[in-house]
Length: 437
Image 1 (cartoon, rainbow, N blue to C red):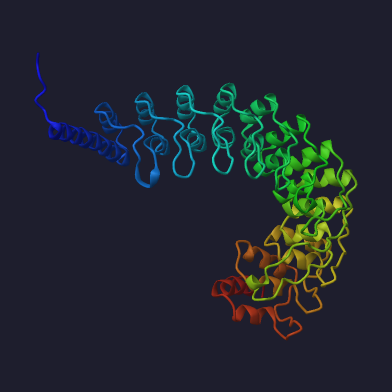
Image 2: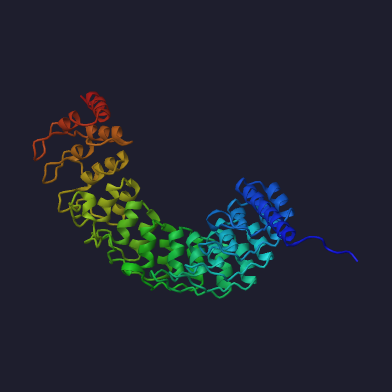
């Protein structure tokens, strides 16, 4: 019978050599992953490297491969029995990261490897929510088929349907709704899935939730209605859908002190203007007091001056929206309105950076030298800055007899403002008014 001649010292040496070899294989794997070298990763794994060896800062090989969006590397690690549920030091798992990075093939590979679909991060966000926001509808369907809980919420009270709605992921939304997701769940910030859909600016996302029974009576932060949110987001299509399906108080001012018609006027949304007036909005309704708290330190300690009550027509003019101006006149807007600060339609249009809007305003109020209580005429409001339509606007005023020698209450004329202002403005001004002279 053979006898072992190796003593304890020899066994220890063999163990150390074996450990060194394993460490060397792991180091090779770490280097290969750091170099994004899929072939070298496969070689290191074949040599016996630990597929779950810790990388720098506690990261795992599988998570690094997912970060690289390298399906071949992910597949090699999974075939080497990498643990798909091994979280990094921040509690992030491979499936959660794959959902966040979005590649459907990597998500499906992890699901095929048995990844835990209900493992949540410390902030309570589940893979289903991340896939609903960042990946494909197919990923969401597979997660649901694998047993993902449809109405798990994170620490902010947000569900997977909210995450899907926020990106307008229509296939994911449809899958979640069909799986029984709560359409009217409210997050801790008082947002519903409908509110998230509105912020996505995807009209179909809003329509899908309306079809699914979204509550139009819900109010978000600061008592914001779905209609007001759609207008804050400049989501005209959503606003029209909401108006077609629900009843909203069109005389209710929002946090900016504006009515829905004011916002539509500023955006130049003609069909929305027509819809609002047809539903009873007043074409001459004025703005109210804003509820915004200003950080005065950012304004050198001085809050902005209050905006006087202003109708939609003047806001359309200030926004350079000539088509909206014309439509409002057709709908009954008063072209003779003068705000408490002395702004009329021409002075408002002088701020709109649109020659077409200014020209139209002068057909409604033909005096190009109309002044406010500070003696400011349209020329005063224009010549202090440069913008794309400056020359055309100056040409409109010059043709209508605007007086560059008209002094304001401080005794300053537009010509003096030009002389002390930007050289580029001075060149344009001289070119226009020398031609007029």
